[in-house]
Image (cartoon, rainbow, N blue to C red):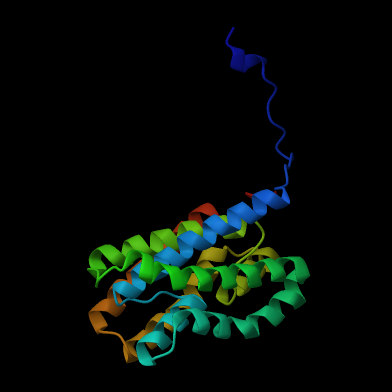
Length: 210
């Protein structure tokens, strides 16, 4: 008889909540991956959805820095997070947004990447962002903006966060036509689909309890 047959099945409703230290570490990893993905997109002259994509668009259209723009465009959504998700979630989200902005200041001097081919940069950047968001969501936070709206829609309406985010991202991608080359906008749209498929296939209602 194999040893595995002597192990009782894990109860389906069992939960093992993350410790505060695990939450901090998970958010730090998630924000690093997301910020690195955004840097890769920026070097590819591409965009993505959400407030991060909106901040990237503004960096192409103005001389302003991404780090500050990302903080500013998220401010209105923090009030929504307090109202619907509570102070704990909101404080984690504010921290996550601030950490991404901080990481963004490090990538350019540390990596110093030249312009990337969007055929590589767009999928690579969106996969990094998707993995980062999964870690951030899993530890009870978000990157603000549309992430908050998507998570509320998932919890209150049973809609998948990835699909909700995808619909909102379409608007940002269309706005990119005003400042980004049409071919790069097409790559960006395909990248946004890839990003949101990562979320839709891995962050589903009822799958995660901790």
